[in-house]
Amino acid sequence: MYENYIRENLVEEKSEEEKNQELLINVIKAKRDLENANNNFQYAEDELIDYYTYQIKALQSKIDYLLKKAKNSGLALEITDKINLRSDKIV
Image (tube, rainbow, N blue to C red; front, top):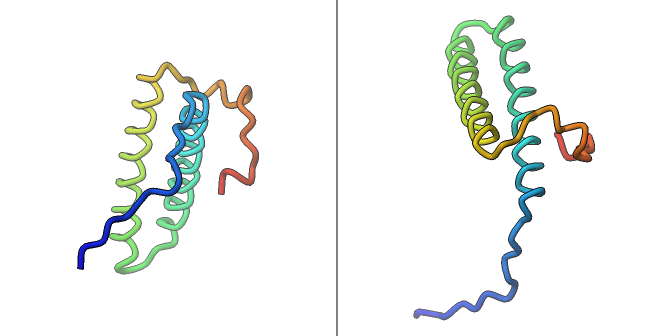
């Protein structure tokens, strides 16, 4: 009944640069999602008003968290031009 599972592939650790790049990409995505939620809120009716209100609040919290994490890592969003952020990574 109990089976042993063997991990076939080792989990690769990401370099600091890859982690920082992923963090910046997540900040950009969250900001884009927040803009979309704000735009949708303007045209929301009935129950959707509550939905977009909660979504906006959640996205603001997410952005605050990610920016705090970036700041603690010593990152600044101005370095995004130094990192190759291809548009296909930011969807």
